[in-house]
Length: 482
Image (cartoon, rainbow, N blue to C red; front, top):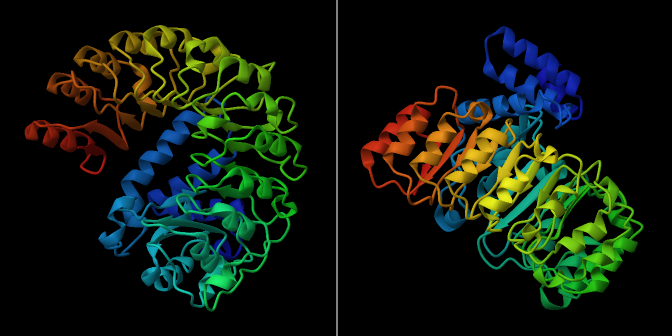
C-alpha cells in the first residue's frame, strides 16, 4: 500500500504525513513543504516565537498552490448559491497539509467525494443547499467526519433532520450555521423524539449520536432559543464537546447561562462563542466560578458585556485563554485595562466595531498581554494615523492577520505600515473603507519588499491603473477590491 493510501486510511497519523512530505520535497514539490509546515504548526504552541513565521508561510503556500492541489475540479455554478460567496478554491479548508473540507452541491457530492477521498484524507464537505436536501441514500456520508450545511434560503429543522438521516457514524464536526433550528432542531441534536413525522410524509428520524461523538458544534445564526439551549446543555450525548458556537442566536435568559455553568457534560469545552446574543448582557456574572472557564482557549462574548462582567468571570488572568472576540463591545472597551487583565497572553483579539479610538488603542497595544498577538481585527475602531504610529513603534510585531478596514487612516498611516518591519509576517491585510487613503498610500505599500500578502483588501479603487499595478505587484488572486 502506498504512503498516500495509508494516510487516507489513517487520517490521524501525522508521522505518515511527514513521510509523504519528505517524498514530495525530494521531488521539489511545494506540497511537501506545506504538509510538513502545517503538521509542525499543529504541534507548535501559539506563544512560540516560531509560530507566526510558520503560520505565515503555510498561508502563502496555500494561497499560491491550493488551486493546483485541487486539480481539475470544476467550480460549482454560482446559480442560487451566489450569495454564499464560494471561493475559486471551493472554500477549501486544509489541516495538517491535506484537504479537510470542501464546498460542493448535492449534484456534485457523490462524484466529488469519490474523486477526493481517493487522493486526500478528506474529512467532509460544506454542502451548499437551498431550502431542503433530497431524501435519498448518501453512502458517501458514512465516511464524513465533518459536515457544514450552508443554506441560501430558509432551511428548517425538517431539512436538517433529512441530512442527519443519511447516517454519519464518524461525524465529529457539525456546522449548522444559518439553519433555522428552533426547539425541534435542538431535539434532533440531542436524540429526542420530534413531531416532524406528523407533518412530513416519509419522515425518517436520524440515527442517534453516540455519547461523546460530536467534538465541535457550530450553531451560528441558527435561531436557537433558550429552550433549545437548555436541551443542549442537558444532553449526555454532548459529553466531551470541545467547541460550542452559539453566536447570533436568540438567547436571553440568566437561567440559560446558569444551565451552561451547571452542565456536567460540557466540562471539556475549550472554545465557547456567545457573541451577538445582546440580551444576555447583565447576566454574565452567572458564569462566575464555572469550572470550564480556566480551560477555555477561545471565548467570544456579546456586545453588551461590561468590564464588571469580565472581572467576575476572570478574577485573575487566565493562563489558557488565547483568543478573545469582543466585536461591538463598546462598553467593555471604555475600560481597556479590563481586557488586558483577562489573560496572561493573547494570540488573537477582535476589537471590531468597538470604536475603541486612538486613546484606548494606545493603552492596549504596548501591553505585555498582547505582545504575542498573531491575529488582530480592528475594523470600525475610529483609528487615525496616530494609532498606526503606536502599532508600529510599541505594538505586537508578529501579526499575520491585521484588519484595519473602516477607520480614519490616510496615506501617512499606510506609509508607516509599509515601512514597518512587522509587516514581514502579515499575510492578510484589510485596508478597505479608509476613505482618505489614495494612490500614494498604496504605492508606498507596493514598495515594501518584505510584504508578501496572501490577501490584501483595498476596498473600492476607482483608479483602474492603480488596481492593475496592485494586482501585478501582489498577484491578481491576492488583491480584493470593491
